[in-house]
Image 1: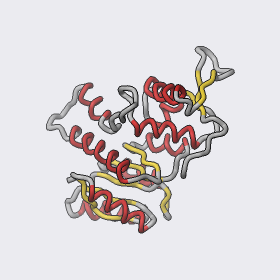
Image 2: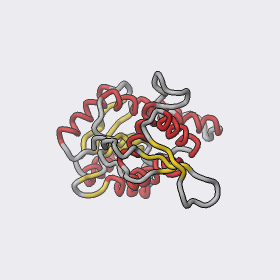
Image 3: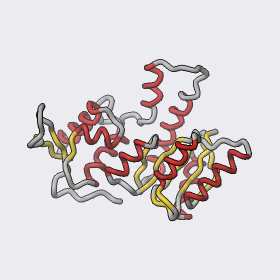
Image 4: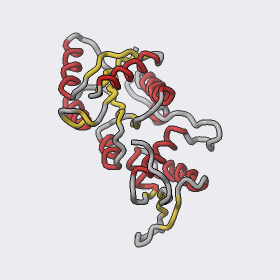
Length: 236
């Protein structure tokens, strides 16, 4: 079983997320923490008992600190625990920082159970692949393990595109006022530039976003993508 610590300041939301964890096969709640200090204590106590917590479902806005600061502490201490950010925070800087500190997935509130379950199921496949009984992995095995973190494409999407990643790209453009290039989207969401451009072009072809040449850029002309000015921002 993959043991999950829910870190969420709102008690009702924390209980709901813990119940969601129980409903996904292969997962069980290891506890609930409402503050960063409580999360540290839960992790420390579990280690003292010889118990492993594999995954944090981590809210970013905690009463006693930012969730990404907690991530940095955990990385600095050498504690091997994966993190899925579960938050309403959708600013580009926050997404970039989450990628930089090793957050494996980013789940934007509000969401329904089906979306939550797809994220955890994708993580479980990644988790299982990374427990291979070998000391080294081939490039293909590494690529397959990381690809498992992205859910498969939904019916109606071009081959190789996933609904989850498409939503993430769309949400990123919705949350920002300025247009973004494929390189900037790739950096923000931890994608390759080629992959980011495929999603952006798909959204542009559907009329969801606009594309235009970026003026003033040196070298090869670059396209930038933005939500039409008349579009309503998504829910926070």
